[in-house]
Image (cartoon, rainbow, N blue to C red):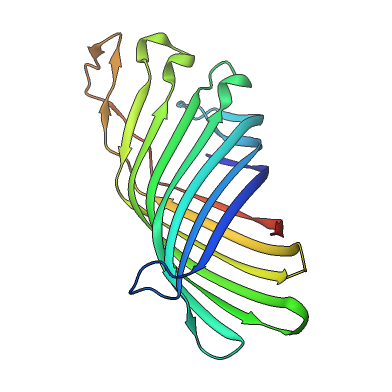
Length: 231
């Protein structure tokens, strides 16, 4: 199956550069939060192979990150900042609102970002920042509200332990006396392996054939453009 669509969002970032501790005089602390929402179209099929499409499924996503790094000056105009941190990503997809046989899905990821930012400064307050990052997946949980279409199944929770993420961006920034402008194309990618198995039950009775629920191997790609004001 495949889902695709357009998301819109708002984001807020606080960044501090300076003394974080006696041993980190050129430290970097960054806190990020974003909320995005939109509608996606489902293209897949039923268990018996019958094709199925569902349009305009409501989706929304929340993500919070805390990053720590250190600034290294290469020249008067170029610096680089390696960093690491921790992040939490939540995605909600509710096909039940558009199709009686659909159900609400909740995905949660805990991960450790490891990356680097390279900054080049130019005249008149212009700068370019290139960022490359790998995300070490720590833990995930997929909650499928199967009770939305059949109460006997209840809600299924699958734990996830293997996967990784990649992301990159190219930021163009213009500083002003009071407010600056940021334009930043970006791409974000996730790849996850099969989840742990959860035995199928019907009103608490185990499936006689021993079948199980699984969140299968999957991947997702986000790409877009961020416009921001810098204070």
